[in-house]
Image 1 (cartoon, rainbow, N blue to C red):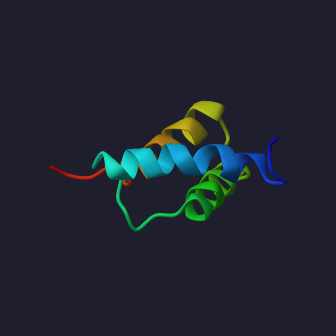
Image 2: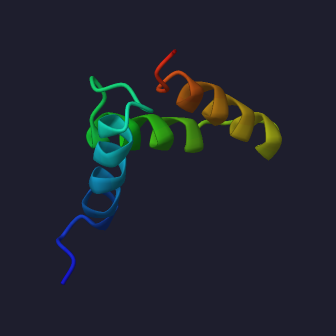
Length: 66
């Protein structure tokens, strides 16, 4: 049975797996990720494509540089 917060409950294991595999920075929490996505999604963008681009750039910043 899911907990009271489905997004963090579902997303945290995925984020942790990505961090353990070395794909995503370890200093980012599920709370950080959800707040980032919400802030971008709730922004007033003139086009959905611009919003998607900004979100993509922000998420690219989470990846580990090798």
